[in-house]
Image 1 (tube, rainbow, N blue to C red):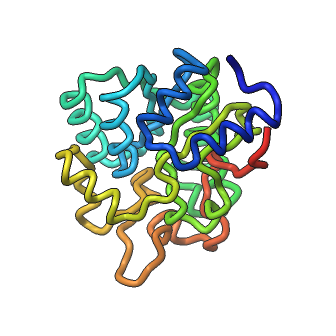
Image 2: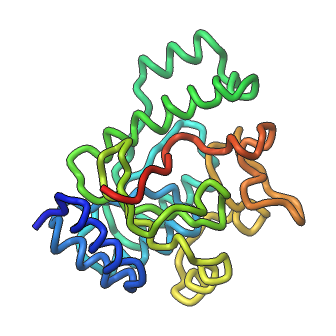
Image 3: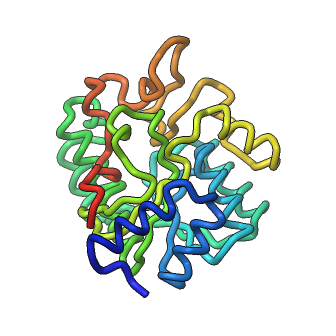
Length: 241
């Protein structure tokens, strides 16, 4: 079975919008066996999903290693492998692209302008992502609407036109307390930076802890205007296929 028209896609949206995550994964796997993939950056949300996947249907897992991650992120990565004994495939920037960019603009040019920062994100994240998603039908993410105003109109199930793939955002409407409660209840390993004020954790030069009263996204690219704080991985498209 495949989702090949707008009516069937809308039906899938309705079916999975309120479904428990394990049930939704089973349904998606029945439709696309062997073609579900999950992208993890080892944040709280991703660790919740990894724990659920470890008890569910086969889902391939990948991560994007930008080369500028926190040491604590690599520690969490190692701890996740030890805990779940799952294969997590790493994707890296294209060497020639990254070498040219750094040679021309410098290693910290992303601080100089939004355009340069987006070029850096494109090379380190977007290009490797497209490689990772190739051949898959469903992309599972740890996105939460609470993390960014740009995500408020996203759906639990939506069509990602940029990558031509169904995107499943199972924790979209979870709040921080629900995520933390799951982590604690199931003793899920997590990044220690979350206990030091880091909410959304990305590359080390582009992430800081948030201060009391600040927005969730304040710790990412804090030198930029709030409306520009996306890296290009999650560009919201029409909810229909």
